[in-house]
Image (tube, rainbow over all chains, first blue to last red; front, side, top):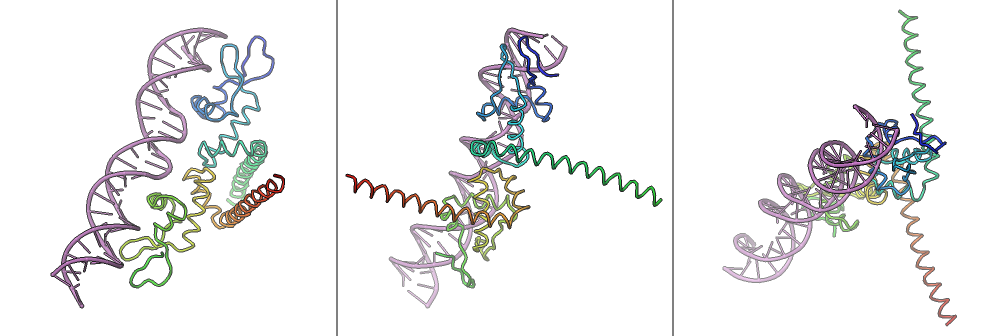
Length: 120
Length: 120
DNA sequence: CTTCCCCATGCCTTACAAAGACCACGAAAT
DNA sequence: ATTTCGTGGTCTTTGTAAGGCATGGGGAAG
C-alpha cells in the first residue's frame, strides 16, 4: 500500500514496494542510488525514500540495462547520461511487446488444447 | 611482422601483434578466448595462436562491446550470438565515422591556428 | 513486530595480470 | 656446419584487485 505521510497528498511508493515489483532486495535499490545520480527519490521528514512513478521509470530503465541487457554499471551510467529520455520510450515499447507476446503464447496454448479436444 | 613457421604460407597474426593493435595485454586475448566461442583462432603445430583478419574482426566486435560500450562479458556474448553478422557492419560504420571525426577535429585546429595567425 | 533508516563489513564473482615453463630463432663459438 | 646460448615471444596455470551486491548491528517510526 502506497506511502502516507501527514502532509503528503501524492501517491508515493516505499522502497519495499519497489523492491517487490522488481523482485529485488531493497539493498540493491539503495546501492544503485549511490551509483546513479538519476535515481535520487524524495525523502520524508524521517528520511524514508518516496518513489514517484517517474522514479520507478528510471529504476526500470536501469534494471533493463543492467539485468536484462548485460551492461556494467558504468556502461549503463554512460548510456543513461547520453540517451536517458529516448531510452525510456524504447523500453516502454519493449515492455508492451513483451505483454503482447505473453498474450499470444497463452492464446496458442488454448488453441492447442482446443485442437486436441476436437481431435480426440 | 606476421608469424613465420615452416609450412604455413598464409599471413597470420600472432597474439602479440593483435595485442599491440588494440593496445591490450595478450592475457586478455587468451582470457576472452575462454569466454567467447566465436574467438577461436587456428593454432600452429607448436600451439601458437594464428589470427586471420576475420578473427581480428571478431575481436574488434568484442572489444567494442566490452571496452567501448560497457557490456559485461555475458551481455556481449548474448548479443554476439543473436546479432553477430549485423553487428560487424554497424561497428565498421562507427569506425569510419570516428576517422572522419578525427579528421575534422584536426582540420578545425588548423583553421583556428590560421585564423589567429591572420588576426595577430 | 514489522518496515524503514544508515553504516560498516563480509563475501562471492568477475575480469583480468603475473608467474613460471617452454620453444623458435639468430648470433657466437667450436 | 653443427652446437651452444641468449633473448624474446608464447604457453598454461594460478593469484588477485575490483565489482556488485548482501548481511548484520543499532536505532526510530508506525
